[in-house]
Image (tube, rainbow, N blue to C red):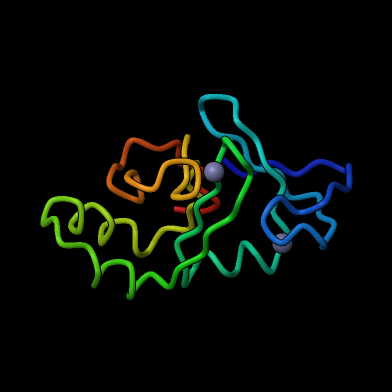
Length: 112
Ligand SMILES: [Zn+2]
Ligand SMILES: [Zn+2]
C-alpha cells in the first residue's frame, strides 16, 4: 500500500533522507521510506526489527541461495520480484535462533 502525504519524515530504513513516502501494513504498522530505499527493495530484501528497530538489507539472490529449506526458498523466490519491506517481531540480535526462519512476518509492499 503506497500512500503519499505532505509530511516530511525521516526514512525508517536509512534514517537520514527525509521523505513523504509512507507505507502502511494491513496490521497498521507504518514506516517512511525514501525514494532510494524504495529503489533498493528491487534488489534487496529489507527486514526491520519491530523490537529494536534495526534494519537488515540483503541481496535477494544471496538470500534465496542460502535458504536450505525448500518451501521457504520457494516462498522467498516468489517475493523476488516484489518490492517489500518485512517487519520482524524479533531480529537475530534480539533472538539469534529466529533469523529469517519464518515467513510469519508483516509484509509491506511498495509495489507488487
Ligand atoms: Zn532511505
Ligand atoms: Zn531486534
